[in-house]
Amino acid sequence: DVKVTQSSRYLVKRTGEKVFLECVQDMDHENMFWYRQDPGLGLRLIYFSYDVKMKEKGDIPEGYSVSREKKERFSLILESASTNQTSMYLCASNLAGGWKDEQFFGPGTRLTVL
Amino acid sequence: ELKVEQNPLFLSMQEGKNYTIYCNYSTTSDRLYWYRQDPGKSLESLFVLLSNGAVKQEGRLMASLDTKARLSTLHITAAVHDLSATYFCAVDDSWGKFQFGAGTQVVVTP
Image (cartoon, each protein chain N blue to C red):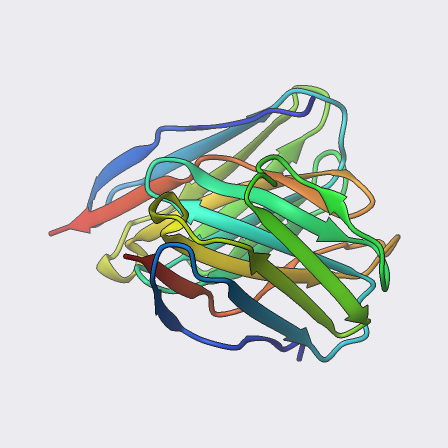
């Protein structure tokens, strides 16, 4: 079974802090994704990565950056957290060019910025 | 730009009755996915639909795909309480990158 893990289930940070959210997958997937989910807005793509050291902006990249130094790990960085970044963050991964391309999701990190 | 619209966004179901959730999308794609999310939890894959006319069934849920109409439906037969959740459809726009619908919150009551 595909397993996608995220470093924290719940996180509380203060405005202005630098925040790291980590995601690890164990199925050798090329693609990894970071979403945020807010009530009434569904899932919005922040950044994605097709390969190590590759990154592409999604729909809402402002205020975020990412790092992918190893194939299995994709980090989301909030350089200076703000209260409007309080949200549920979901990581996902899938195969590149695979026939099914199904995305597998991690358990999510609920981030609160005070 | 690929747009995915789900309706309704909220569905109050009575136990034992049948209902349908609709997912329309704006560009050609033959890959569509349905997910379920329980409150406070992550997304769980329900169905993968990979071609025109594809139909998948699991228990009381059945999903179908009409790529010519750019429409997928999720049909619920004889709703039961444990189907209460939020259901998302997602379309693969390219290379495994998905566009999600806004989700349909389903509440099943006696």
